[in-house]
Image (tube, rainbow, N blue to C red; front, side):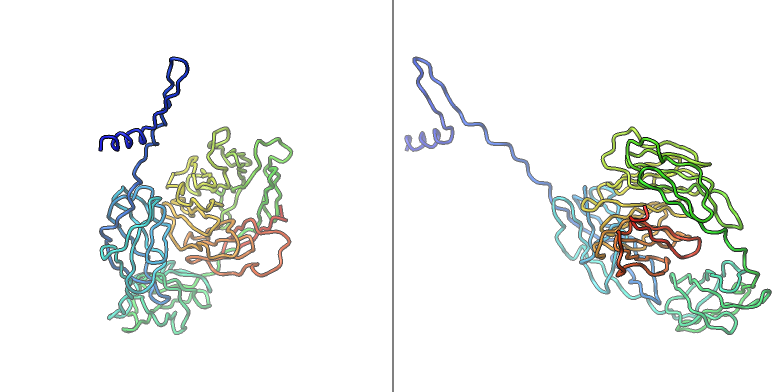
Length: 455
């Protein structure tokens, strides 16, 4: 027994004695490498609220905001509602996440959280139920029409209640199509009528038609003067600027040595002509974060000369402060005379950020990733994304004029609208000599696609 124990002790220690003259050399194997326990997987203990409405074409409801409680949420990379992941979430603490429900499906789903340590196990505590909005039992009520003066074909916003499942909208005796936004808001394009005409706008739903009142009246006025002649700029990687239409030339970095290539530009829009914005300056931004100002575009600083973890890929104007943001491919945001509303750093580890767009009121912005993911910050609405839904990578994002939607554009020319951004077509399926690299919108609803051959 003692010899067996002694053999075990020596086999564990492995002691080697080698005689060298009268000295002994002892060789002892190195100690085993220390091991650490992996971080535990996340756990979801409750979801509040646990129910929300599914959006339908005639019953659109905003995606519900949900608070997820549990443990081990640090470093969360994904939040799932059933088989659909949502990208608009915020890790408040290791035990709380606030998320806007993503793509939904009618019925019960499990809400799960994914971190580098794994995905939370499903249980009754993580259930969330999507239900159909109830059919109103009272007729619609119109409380206001904005604007109340409009020209033929103009768009008005109708505010009120009980608009879900509305069956028709009438201006006077003319039925017109509508675009429901929620149970309390509709968008309509009014039919043509002579200037000076005053008509009531009524809404009909399953329970009847809205009562006529002064709040629903619209007055037809003359159409506003047309916008100034459209124009735009193109910027090359060497800083050269090319102007088209009535876009002015205010200088460029063309012919100047650059430490890094120019990757984008933004117009400095502060002036008005016939009620429409015009620009008298612009900025160029380089991949090292350098900013170059021209015309009346002020210089508020840049990331030039600063170490960056990832190259800058674009910039956007804050239309309120006149400042700007830079965005890097890792989702980092750098603010200059513009508020910081958050970044996508660490939120898109498998797909680089390719561009950004700001809201018209300067209260937020969107970032787009090459895989179609969209990250919303500030008052920028979460209108959806196209994660892994397109045949080729996304290369840009463009907001509509009202900030009520946006388009994603891919290298094959596919354009995907979200929110109120209209579907005006795309070059998807057309033979292209070079891939599409970006897009820009017009004053009203259209847009322009740019191919790499245009550079």
